[in-house]
Structure formats: C-alpha cells, structure tokens
Amino acid sequence: MKKLLISMIVFVFFALPAGVSAQGEVTVCTQNYGGGVVCGVHTPIETGIAENIPLIASGFLGASGVIAYFSRKLKKTE
Image (cartoon, rainbow, N blue to C red; front, side):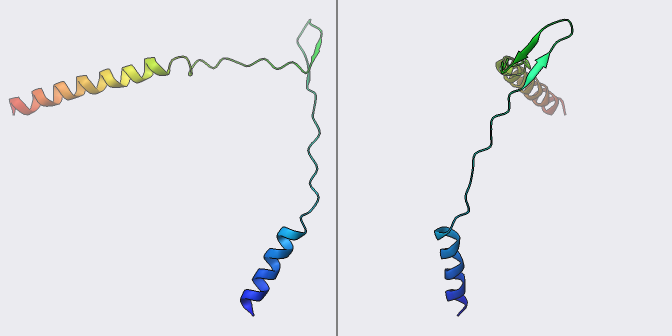
C-alpha cells in the first residue's frame, strides 16, 4: 500500500506539472552624476584577482620552497 501511494504521488508529480513561465527581463537604467541615462548596457567590472592568479600561485610555490629549505636546515642543526 505504501509503495502504491508513493508511486501514485510520483506519477502525479511528473504527469501534471505546474505551468512555468519565464521571468520577464528587467532593464536597468543608470544615471551617473552629470551624465545621461544609460539603459541596458552591461560593463563588467575588473576585480583584479583573475589576472593575478599565476602570480599568487608562484608566490605560494616560492614560499613552500623557502619553508622546505629552512625546515631541512633546522633538522640538520638539531
């Protein structure tokens, strides 16, 4: 009985989906101080982190090399 009830609920869920309508587009209008109104123009903002990923990665690699060098040097002196 439990399996029958669950299978009926699943069947109704898939057979009778609710109507879905797409969300309407929203046009964003901005106005800079002393400028005109600009509607619908999207300009990406550069955050700076995406361009510096290789620099950050090489910094981590260099730091790990320095730490490995000093840790081996400290092991030899002890």
